[in-house]
Image (cartoon, rainbow, N blue to C red; front, side, top):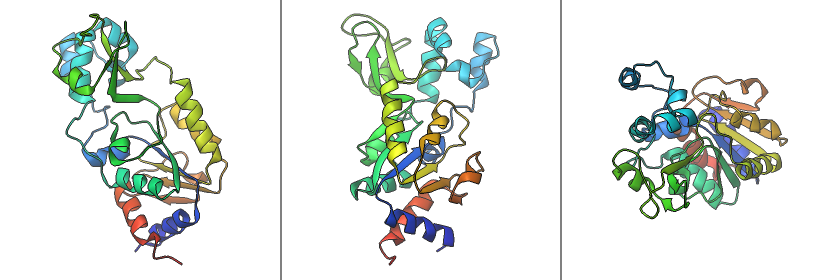
Length: 249
């Protein structure tokens, strides 16, 4: 077993208040691609050049609702995706009483599907959708089945995904919960994120604990401040660390 995996396992064994902060790299192991892989079809269709960020912006949602939902359903909802080794390992750590919270930038709901109970979804979830008029709830299956712009069966209002679009602010209650969890943690594991999306990435500055761990395939701006850096697939790293954790003295 590599020394860095053994070191991670030792930290996990000694920690009692772990928080995990994750990004798209956690879900790519469930075959959910980063949405930034923009499809030229959408640019061609509208005869304008749009970035992926613009395609999921509040402005685009308001001005081109049909095209927005076509892109949204094609690129951001993956109903067949299931939890991977990373999600399962984190859920096990929570069950053991060691992991106190997951803070995620992902919107796929896979942490909850794996069994995690305390999850702060900074950017919302595709699993939740609400009528903008009467606030009736709809799941992602309703959105997928809708033709064109999904509308409410009760009042006819537009049904909007409970995801934070570009130009929209993060939910303050979610931010407060995440900040509180991070500030109380003795160990913060940052995984599967390049730490370039703000304001979410700025939340790690509230960590005041003992162990800062970075698990990511590529380098990040926080590597130089970390106590342990592992450049590898996060699911493999976490599952291996859990496997040997109980064998350590």
